[in-house]
Amino acid sequence: MRRSFAVLHRGQRTPGNVPFATTPRADAKPGPSRNGDHATSTDSEVRKLVQRVFILPETVRAPEAVAFCGADSGAGCSWVCVCAAEVLAEQVTGTICVVDVNLRSPSLHEYLHTERAPGFAEILENSRPVREFARRERGNNLWLITAGAPGKSPEAALHPARLRARFSELRAEFDWVLVDTPPVCSYADAVLLGQLTDGIVLIVGSNSTRRESARIAKESFEAARIPMLGAVLNKRTYPIPEALYQKL
Image (tube, rainbow, N blue to C red):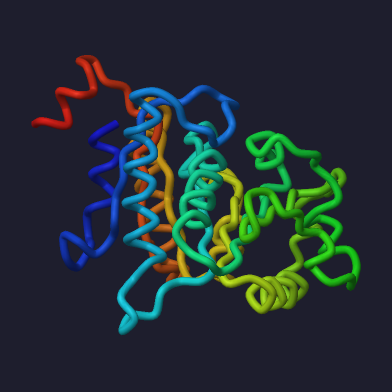
């Protein structure tokens, strides 16, 4: 998978232009809580990503809406998105809303151990304020909007004009909006949603994402002129004790 991850570096203007993170393997649905040595490493890497993407010097305009996109299914995009939202909520006083727009395979509600509906699908179906669909999850500043119940045709629900209007409302209601999207190599949703944000964080799976998938994902966002704000090599395994890697 290192070769796949190297594809993401290629073509960047400077070595530090896009922040990268590597996270160790996590269980399929553990929730965002992190325990043990792997958890400590994961927390550290996600914190670095959050610091480099969201918490920038006052002279630099930091992104306020970011889409988290998996190169393909199984990369762990939803898990990384939730972890980043929790870390950001710990470090800032403004409001953060994590939104599940993966209407094809929603899972944020499972990671945060809450009910699924109503949510973003219902936001697109009526004119009620988006705040009515947001539920406070951690402390006073982390909110969740689940995917809701999109029905049998998720692509029909994602009408561009309606999406733009509702995303504008989300930006007005919350200081930061983190969006979980479907895998970019499987559906066009990620590109459509990425165009409504300030940029994307791309997640590739250490043992699942193929090099070609990583390349296609990167080129898809470049063609749509969507800034790549960061990338995560997720579910990395360590053939030798992880502590030794930290000393290399």
